[in-house]
Image 1: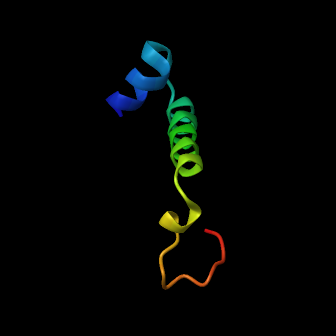
Image 2 (image 1 turned 180 degrees about the vertical axis):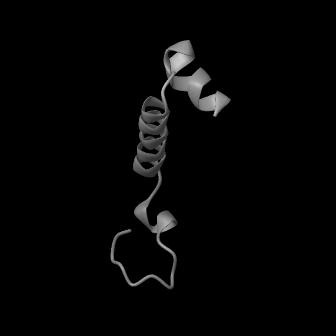
Length: 49
């Protein structure tokens, strides 16, 4: 949690909703930088996860 606050919001990230929004932003950024197949487990039948 401290890393999220330090990385994206400083002390201005004060509510749970804002912290969750920042966590979603981090997740989206990582997924965009990683090939889609890295996120798909072989036993899942979805073409894109």
